[in-house]
Image (tube, rainbow, N blue to C red):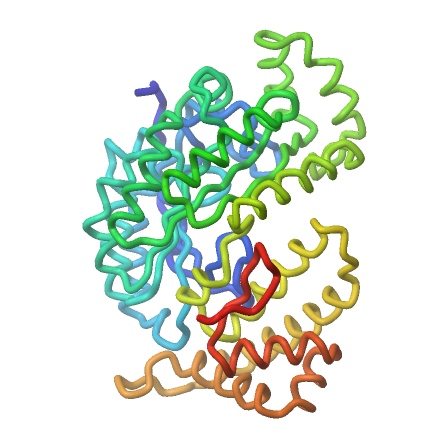
Length: 407
């Protein structure tokens, strides 16, 4: 277990809703993370970046929101969740809810216990096997997605890049145990670090072992290095452990983009290779439609699907300008309709749970029965027909084949 310094603080908010679901986590609700900072101390983590305003020494100084479970309970008592259905994402991009400090404080477990009465699905992302401790509570949610990040199955590389996380074998164990408990599960294979973990040998072993463990998707991504603390720390690790790579990284990340993105020319072919390899395995390269349609309302499911289709087609070199325009039109319609409904005092009753969700979904289902209405919504006849068919047939869009399949 790593050493760390703790500063206790109070959470100001608990459960909150977005105007649109998060296409990455496929959730509508975000419950605040109990922790800020992370003892996983991953060499590549962009949580170090100045953008996130995390104080102290990264990997050592952890802020602990001791009252987060109480805040969430108060929100649920106030009925924050009663009008809209949607998955709750636990965690954040700058902490792991099952990092070492969780064994001491148990705030993630308390948070899950507080969320159970909401009766909403939940999704979790972690690099730590401690999540298995809470499978008893997760079994009480209507639907669960347990994700783990694995960037390599080589223990030496993992120790270099992810010193505070559970071993790759333990994380593969999370995938297997989650499937055994009936949860949805998959792997975030990101970031794949240039010349270290993005090699054909590493990705082949990684994808193969994740599939054997029972992963329902493998989501690969490349490394970003934001100028400042994140990039400086990563280069420090390279200089100490792999000095021969420093010049290659200097060339690849020499543009110093604020986003941290590398030069795209050498990265695009790699990303296409990863996605081609996964397609050959019949493995989705994003959280698949068949999973997140169990976690989100119909309207939100369509939005996430459109975002994913844009990525899937782009990886195959297919132009997506028309799809982007249609997605923007749909996002505007959905966020505007949702905003209007949230402003109204809509009654909630046991016979009519989640009335905002029902109203939005009913409107979209009605449009699906009228070709002219769906065309007006998307301004794209082919896409309008596909979405209508998915809705009316309750089918799913299969990512490896890019085709409609029975639900």
